[in-house]
Every structure is written in structure tokens, then in C-alpha cells.
Amino acid sequence: MLAAPINPSDINMIQGNYGLLPKLPAVGGNEGVGQVVAVGSSVTGVKPGDWVIPASAGLGTWQTEAVFSEEALISIPRDLPLQSAATLSVNPCTAYRMLMDFEQLQPGDCVIQNASNSGVGQAVIQIAAALGLRTVNVVRDRPDLQKLTDRLKSLGAEHVLTEEELRKHEMKNFFKDMPPPRLALNCVGGKSATELLRHLAPGGTMVTYGGMAKQPVIASVSQLIFKDLKLRGFWLSQWKKDHSPAQFKELIVTLCGLISRGQLTAPACSEVPLQDYQRALEASVQPFVSSKQILTMC
Image (tube, rainbow, N blue to C red; front, side, top):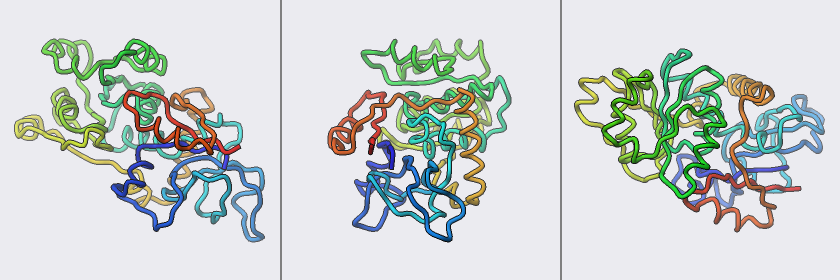
């Protein structure tokens, strides 16, 4: 293994409250990049020197060395930046599928999301920009708000708003200057999700892929009846079950193309040696930390 990030889903899996739990004892980590050292005599898909990423969750990437089956891995170009390679197989895949699979969006259409500084949020901003989509990006208020706003806009965010700003009455005028969003991406739940629904265009869809507030999604009856809003969920592991390994590889190839063209970069990262994993785990659960912890093995 070369490097592996700490994602919220990794923490949830350790806590035992995730939709997919490995048999114990198990190694943590669902994502990362490794370099092939040796292959068995019947292996044809990968060769020594190749960079590989997990084909599915639960592989256990927080380790220095591992033996995996050929089917458990996908080869990727070795010229990708290490942080991009290590964070490729979860958040960017989730972002791309949510943008493509729920609404038939056209260039100029608008997407609204919360938790916009998360790994998925940063990928949504960049992929949406590459597709010609406009984004309204909601974040929690914080001391370094301007710094975060500047960073998200440098990735391609058109608008960055706080949760409090989104609740203001003046927001009605905001959407006079741009089309109301047809797609909302919710990773928080609670009041934040309710606000996203309030600004969705009639017939629009809100996709929930996380619940950081640990509060239910609440939609008013009038929103469902008179605006015909749709509430959907997305889980990448389920998408993989419903699609072939070849389709997942095709998704990875598409994202590698965006990376090589400079249209998709890794989220802000802090590299931590594997032996300092406790420091990295503690940092990963701190509020308002916009930097993803990446364990490095070499």
C-alpha cells in the first residue's frame, strides 16, 4: 500500500453503524492506492509496478502490505498524483453518479448541495464545472469562512453560502438571477436538508447520501404535493452491486480523464505516516476540519 485516506464511512464501519460490516477481526480502510509487488502465475489483469485501487469496500487499506485477488483490484495510471489516486474510488465516484443518475441535467442547469467542503462536495463542485453546471454550495459558518469560500470558488464553485444565509428571506431574490436547482445533494439531514428542499425547482430531486447531523430528513406535505419533489438515496456500494465490474472500471477511467485534464483534484489533504494513525483518526473527527487525513505507508 502507498496511501489510504480516512473517510467518515471508515469511522462508521469501525463504530458498527454502517450498511456494510466486515467479519471481525478486520483491517480498517475502504479506499487507497497500492503498487503491485508480485503476481501469481495465472494473473493477467495486473503486473508488478502497476498502481491499483480497491474494486469494492471492505478490503482493508490501512496496512503496509496485503495479498488480494485480481478481481478485488482495478489498475489506474501511475502518473496520477498520489493524493488523487488514494481518494479516487469513493467520493469522486459518488459525486459523478449523483450528478448523472437522478436528473437529466444540461449545461447551465443548477445544483445545490450542503456539506460542500466535504470530499464529495469538493468533487461535485469540480465535476459540475466540467459539465457546465452551476452550483450553489452551502457550508456551516466558521471562523475562516472567507478562506474556505475562496478555496471552493477556486475549484469552480459559483456561489458559496452559509446555512444561515440560505434561511434568509432575501434568498427568494437570489434565485431570480439563476435557475432554481433541479438537483439537491444532502449529506447532513435535519434543518439543512429542509432548506435545500425549500429552494428546489418543482419536480426536482433531493438525493441523500449522508447524515452528518444525525437528524431525519423532514419534507412538508405541500412540497411533495404541490411541488412534486422527489426524495432519493444514494450509496455507492449498492450502485456497484447493481452494475457490472466493467461499468465501475468505466467510471474510474472517466474520472482519471478529468484528473489528467486538470478538471478534478484531490480534496485538501494532510498526509500522516501510518504509525501516527491515532493522531490522524482524532483529527478526522474534529469539526470544521476541511483537510482529509491520508495515511502514508512509505
